[in-house]
Image: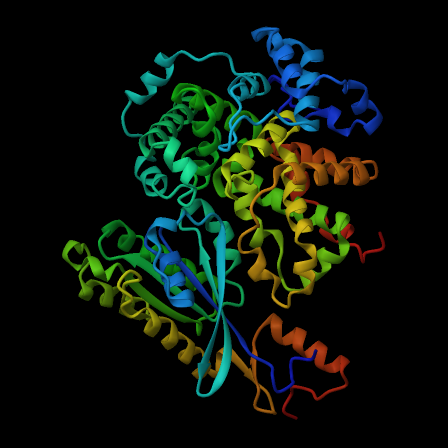
Length: 213
Length: 356
C-alpha cells in the first residue's frame, strides 16, 4: 500500500537514553501502557521498544518509543539507534548524583550523533522520592540551559509529568518543520532515508515529485 | 575444523561431531532408557571428562533424549555433574571461592547491585531457590578473578568488568548447582571458555552473533527474513538479549536448563540457530502481522525440545552447503580472528535475492 493514502499515519521515533537504573523503562511503560510494575522490571539488555498511537490536533500519530540499555558497554549499540530519531529523552535520577554528573557525556554524544534540530528533553526522574533528592531542580535547569535542551522533573511511579513529557515532545516534533519534509500536498513526511524511500515508492507509482518546481 | 590453539579444546566450545549425519547419530542409540544410560556414563567416575568415547555418548544422549526431568522445577539430580563434565570443571574447593569473597566489594560492585535485584524478576522458581545475596557474591567474585588475571598479565588485554546480562547468565548456574561454590566454578569456566567474546568491551561477540543471526535467518527462511527486513526488524533489534544471555532471558527457567544441557553438550553457538527456531515457531503469526515488531518484543515461552529439534533440522539442511559460515558461527563466541572475519563479511552475499 502506498503511504500517501488518507489513512497514512506518520511514525515518530523517540529514544530514551541515560545511565543504568534511572528509570528509562519505567517511563516508557508508564507512558505507553500506563503501568507501574517494579516487581516485574528487569535490566534492559540491548534495546526494548513500544508503540503507542496518539492524537494531536485531530490527527493520529504512531509513536515508536525506543528504550536502551544504560551501561556504557552498550554505547556502540545505543548510538546506532540515534539514526532517524526525531526526539530524545535524556534521563537521570534526581536521587542519584552520579547519574546527573554523567549527563554531559550523554548530551555531548547526542550532539555529535544527531541533527541539531532534533528535539531533546532532559528528564529528572523519581520525583516521588523528593525527600532523598541529590540534585536540585535549579541544577537540572542549569544543565538543560547549558546544552539548550528542554527540562522536566517527573515520576514514573506517581505518574507525574510523564504524559506531559512525551506529548510536549510530540507536539514540538510536529511543529518543527525541519524535522519533516513538507510535501506539496501538505502531508507530513519523515525526513532522511525515509524520504528517499518514500520518493522512490512514489516514483514507482508514477506519482508526483516531492520537489516544488 | 580448527580449534583455538594453546587452550584446552573442550567439547562445549566447538563440537565437530555436531555436523555428523543422522546415520552416525543413530548408531549410538540403543534400547536402554536415557536415565539408565546416564547412570552408566556417570558411573565411570570423574575420569569421564578425559574419555572421548564416553563424552561422545553423553553428548549424544543429551541431544537425543535430554536429561530425564525429575520434577516440575526442571531439575535432574545428575545435572551438576553433567555440566561439570561438559565444561571440564573439576570439583572446586570452597576456600578458593571464599578467598575471593574475602576481597570485599569489587570495582563493579555498585553496577552489580543495580541488576541483581531485577534478575529474572518474573520467575517465581528462581526467586524461591536463589537468594539475591548469592548472585551478588558470585558476580562480585568473578569480577575479582577477571581483574586479578588481567593484573597478572601486566594489565594488558581488554578491559574487564561486569556487563549487564552477566547476571542473567549466572542465574541458571545458581539455580541448578549443588552449592554456590560449584555455581561459581561452572559459571567462571563457562564465561571464560564458552563465550568470552560476549562479555568483552563493546560486546563485539554479541554484535557478531547478531550479524550471523541475520545471515543464517536469510538462508534458513528467506521469506521470513525478507519480511522482517522490510519492517527494519534486524537481529540487533529483537535478538540482543537472547544472544547475549544464550536465551536465558526467555522464561521459564526449567526450559532454559534443558536448552543449556544441549548448548553445553553441542556448543553454545547453536543458540543462534535456536533463536531462529523461536522465530520459525511463530512465523505464521509474524508473516500475517502488519507490525511483527510487537510480537518480537518478547519471545514466546521457551520450549527447549522443540527448539533443539528445529535447530538440528537447520544444521542438517544448511550446514552441508555452508561450511565456511558454520565455522564462523561455531567460533564467534570466543575467537577474535574469526570475529574479524565476520566483521568483514559482505552480508549482501547471503541475501536470498543476491543470486543465491
